[in-house]
Amino acid sequence: MAEIIIEGVTKRFAAVEALQRVDLAIADGEFMVLLGPSGCGKTTLLRMIAGLETPSTGRILIGGTDVTLLPPARRDVGMVFQNYALYPHMTVRQNIALGLKLRGLDAAEIERRIGFVANLVQIAPYLDRKPRALSGGQRQRVALARVIAREPSVSLMDEPLSNIDAQLRTIMRAELLRIHRKVGMTTIYVTHDQEEAMGLGDRITVMNFGRVEQMGTPDDIYARPANAFVARFIGAPRMNLVRAAHGIGRDVIDTPSLRAPLPPGVAVPDDVLVGFRGEDARPGAAAPGEMAIGGVIDVVEHLGAQIEVHFRTADGQEVVVRRPRNERHWREGERIDLAVPADNMHLFDAQGGAALRPPGH
Ligand SMILES: Nc1ncnc2c1ncn2[C@@H]1O[C@H](COP(=O)(O)OP(=O)(O)OP(=O)(O)O)[C@@H](O)[C@H]1O
Image (cartoon, helix red, strand yellow):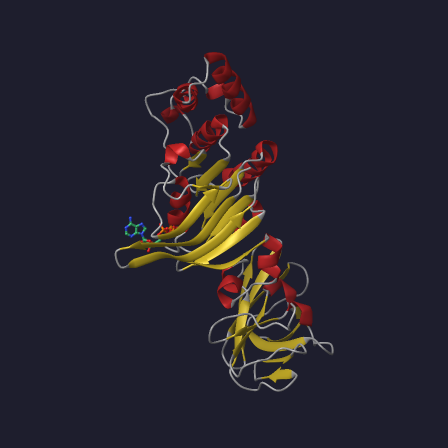
């Protein structure tokens, strides 16, 4: 069992509080993604799980053992870094074999494991090459192979695909998932790329300023963001957040930009952000119970299968919608009404950013 528990972990570097009381539980065999903007503390948290940093306060447990003060070598974790960290003077085979020799495995077992991982990540033809004779993607696979061959119960990955071109990255992402399904080790994967996070994670932990903003399945985080930060960070294009600082009635918000029904049972303050995703707004009049929003088309961008249309609402706020290519002709300068189903509407407190939901949701 390699369940990982992070309990009240903080980390201070002089004046910087890199992590502020982080609590997390990662299940055995889970693929957990740590996602957040640059500087939010993802790498610091990963390095603490690896044993390369010590928490200022709190505890870390791996498989039920308190490892907070254990050195990296005694934690049974493998780490894949952004820069691969392969030994340049050794062949691929020697790079993979090194850690296995250090663990005292015999030659036959080392050969067996090299054969297995080379097959798994498809590097068999390159086993006798040095890293410099490999492409970025091939080096990446070697770095992965090296970790998998050790059979650690936990594997930690820090932006391992960031140096790979976009096309190969998509292939590698699918490969990572395939390998994870086969090998099943508990994996923690750091990225600032929300698309990568959505594609890979069984669950995602969204971080900001050293804090956990939300933890949940990709669908949870996409469909039920806990606050305005998560709503903006997940999804491309970003969720539209239209400010409504007045016009808030008992069961409807009515501003120059929009008219939106309020779900029953929600206590709504005087200053809210009304959120909806660009793909959930369709052109046309709102049916009863739907949200209506109007604006003038500012810019139209053709993206291939879809068209991204930027609007300006009556009170000057920007709204972006994404619609199928052939749905209609969008003319810059045209006035348009949009409708959003009530289920696709999100409400956030404009002050703290917390999602406003009826009790029990
Ligand atoms: N050794 C250190 N000394 C001082 N400050 C540090 C140290 N390591 C990290 N920090 C600070 O802690 C904060 C979190 O850094 P961290 O590297 O964990 O962020 P990150 O989310 O991984 O960012 P990125 O995506 O840019 O790698 C940052 O403000 C960083 O400057």
